[in-house]
Figure 1 (spheres, rainbow, N blue to C red):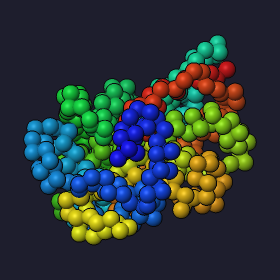
Figure 2 (cartoon, rainbow, N blue to C red):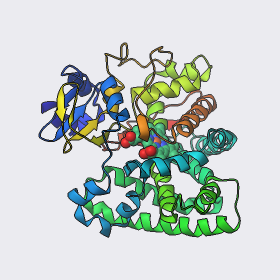
Figure 3 (cartoon, helix red, strand yellow):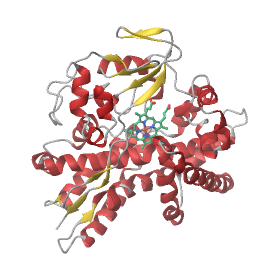
Length: 399
Ligand code: HEM
């Protein structure tokens, strides 16, 4: 209980890793009160996420825990998100999305990502030319992922400026700990849905080579495989799932470099491949720290679980499990025992993993080569969040 209480404090959230180390000493899974089990071991997390007996909380859980959810547009949308669906709906919708979100489409985005990154770096260079501080989170980490998702979906450039703040408001739904934020989240959800509805009408009339046009082709193929609502609502999911997560990958990675300059030199001179660097950032400081499942009658590493148990899988702790990783607190892109849990596992494994990895692998070498002297300019501030881990501000000098 002491460890859990500490995890709930700002200091514990700022550096949860000593607390995770203490949890590892207690075993792979820990009962944390009636109806709640926390899984911290790498292998145990992996098996829970891959076990179809464990379900995500879906509409039925919402009906029990929050019966008035239908009054909130964001939850009406969220109940169609594949993240919150179990089979058979999950398998049906996910496979259709996966058919349009192909490796070819992701790889094809590389030149656009490089171009966007260079444009943002140009602006940072200009702003920081006098040696003053520039804000990495605001000027780069926040802008790149949302622009990339816009490009992927096929949102015209002219609309993107208006789009970003809405996406930002909507992402807050993942860390909902204050109902006072619900009106802004609902408003963003409604506005985004209205926008996607209008854009879908345009793409139906005039298809392009983008994900939205492909999804429409699937949903219009006549056998009702994807309803309009399922399609449009899962577009908003792509936006929220791919935005702040990737922003935090960029911010957490840069902070590691600022504190450990040789790690940056290795990426700059190519001795650490960018993909290996990104994998190790994901492991060392995961942008998503946890996810959860609803249990069934079974046990997790000796801790009993039932249909009423909430099973919290602490991905950030699994990534530092000393049973799985040698010297887990050491940042080492060349470690032979890589394989973070940061994108989850099993049926809900992150749809955007290849895209997020590509963004990181394109962005870090460009950033570091463009700014050989990049350094911290004061203390960064953390976002005080538990699920998503990242910075609010990360000031740097680049000249
Ligand atoms: C570093 C960046 C990212 C991280 C750390 C991350 C992490 C995750 C995790 C942990 C899950 C599984 C959640 C669970 O099992 O409950 C997930 C699912 C998902 N992610 Fe990502 N993600 C990232 C980027 C992206 C991007 C760029 C996109 C899309 C543009 C995306 C779209 C999704 C979707 C749609 C799901 C739901 C999959 C399903 O439920 O079947 N993610 N992500």
